[in-house]
Image 1: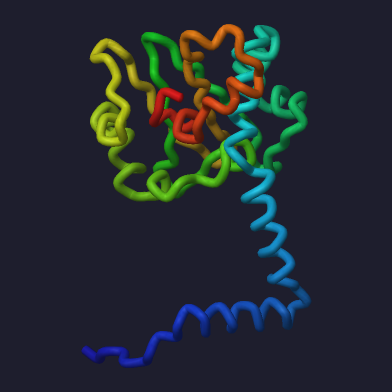
Image 2 (image 1 turned 30 degrees about the vertical axis):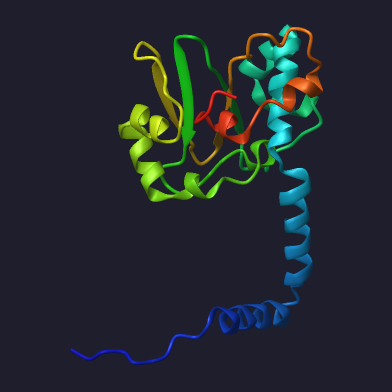
Length: 195
């Protein structure tokens, strides 16, 4: 058996090689990276999902639309998803049911609505354990649910993306949609936190 002793190129050299090939094919990777970075940090943010939830908490008709036809609801709200995200399902947490989402294959999320996935969401430990021992994983992440609460885990598919609608906290009756949206975290939209 022979051992390959070819040195491995540094990340910088590999990146330069990829950019050279892209340039040869008429592509502009720097422009794409700048555009993607702007989208990821300024447009694909958890505030989009938080705004949908806050509006649903204050508008029963919109809540019904969001829960029955998520794609129509995001269009009505002026948001969008990539074409291959054909379905957007919103899962409503209640006193008796707590929903949590994952992607067991990789790290798919409704990223234009809830933002890019956090590092822990992409980790194999989360992806594999949350479907087998959800209560334990949630507890390790700081969310202890009552024993009688049913936990439902939803695994993203090739064309379906999920978002959790957390329960509206008590004492928020007089708050505006913007004030309510400011309470809602990305973790709550994934289902690993209450709010």
